[in-house]
Amino acid sequence: MNLTINKERLLHDLNAVSRIGIGDHGSVTRLVFSIKELRSRQLLIHLMTQAGLKIHIDRIGNIFGRWNGANPKAPAVLAGSHLDTVVQGGKFDGPVGVVGALEVVRTLKENKFPLPCPVEVVCFVGEESSRFGFSTLGSSLVAGVVHTKDLANAVDAHGTKLEDILSSMGIYRDNLSSIKRDPASVKAYLELHIEQGPILEAKNKKIGVVTSIAAPTRFKVVYTGQADHSGTTPMEMRKDALVAAAHLIGYVEEIASQYSRMEQGRVVGTVGAMKIEPGVINAIPGKAELSVDIRSISAEAKTHVAGLVRERAQEIAAQREIAVEILPIREEEPVPLDESLLPLIREICEQKGIDYEVMPSGAGHDAMQMAKITRAGMIFVPSKRGISHSPLEWTDPEDICLGAQVLLETVVRVANEEN
Ligand code: GLV
Ligand code: MN
Ligand code: MN
Figure 1 (tube, rainbow, N blue to C red):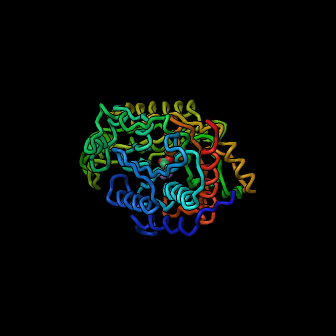
Figure 2: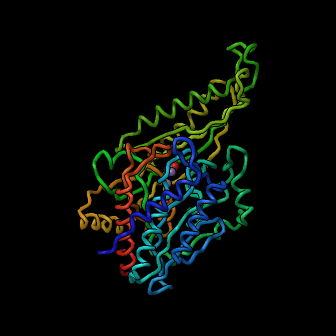
């Protein structure tokens, strides 16, 4: 295909997005529903308007920028990702897929490339779970897979409930399914993303073709002991909730490590956030709340390890004679991506002489939700030293442009497929 994306424009717009929320050491923070995140969405709307796309914004704020092909009534090929970030994250986790898709559509449109169906650039709201512990919020609503019980424990560090934010936008328990997109209106979903792991760089491959996405089981563990004076309370009389939490954190690492080999399901376990009360130097912690995130590409291995962690959480509480509560956040199945898109992307790489790797994704993506209503495929580009969710996250601009070019060719191939 002799159609080439405009690298300069792509990198320019990626840069513009990454300046929103820029902080120390080049980190980027755009937590979902923060002013910075909203500004990044406004910039995208501006860029879509400039490109002459027809914009639709649903009730949660997911943005769809559409270019109608020859048949506006045909199901559309969707391509995108997210613009929200973790706290002090990088520039590319998410925006590469959104701005990459925008560049693809701009290239098609300005070249008046004949497409038999519409193509839409998508920006999903709230892919990251950093604020509420709830990931892929916008795409989950589009896929119609958010249920009331999932929202019960989704609360941010300041006590704001996700449910309250949703209701301020007219999204209530009884209309959660109203944002669901009609699957008949979608032909496929494609997502370009940085790998966020070390495989491509280690193997000197330029593109990753994704087979499946590991899924998380997430819950909070709340230990309640007794806050007391740190100077007067003898060691044998303490009910220290934080020490109980510390034992559990050690166990999460230990047990996940025992199941971490690929053939065991590549289980990973993390305690990434904790709240301590009263949280002062001269009081024994009376309450410790920790978040547990266990992921695997095998549902069985994940369920097994999560079960062991829950059991251990109870045992620790019993041994220390303190109370424990386990609050579920989200339980998801690992998601296989579409089997027909995979060979198609491989073929494009082969034709272009690109070294590629067929691989699973350890990170979560909007594609895992979209796969529930349509055919979903993902294209990875290498992450320097495998680092992401960190200011050190980096991908070579040439690699980003190559990924966008592969996305362009994939969109064209998929659009032209017979149904
Ligand atoms: C998203 O990046 C996640 O997997 O947490
Ligand atoms: Mn991320
Ligand atoms: Mn991401």
